[in-house]
Image 1 (cartoon, rainbow, N blue to C red):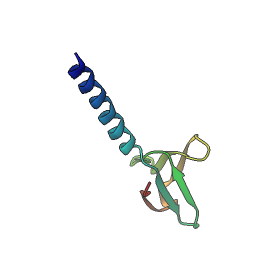
Image 2 (cartoon, one colour):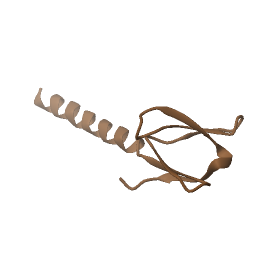
Image 3 (cartoon, helix red, strand yellow):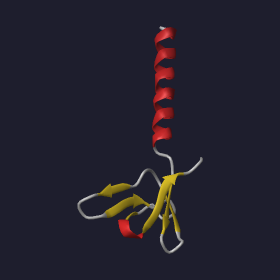
Length: 77
């Protein structure tokens, strides 16, 4: 019985670790010199040219035109 409980706890901890690693913050640097910190990876819509992201400061989902983005990359957390 204790072995099953240990396996369940270990699996749960491993799952939480992988989920936390997938949602790392990202930095979007714009052409006008601003840096936007996002909560998770931004999504690029190739049809509209918009980048959707969740702003880490406000918690709101926002969009920016792809032409205004200079670089995007993961932050070292």
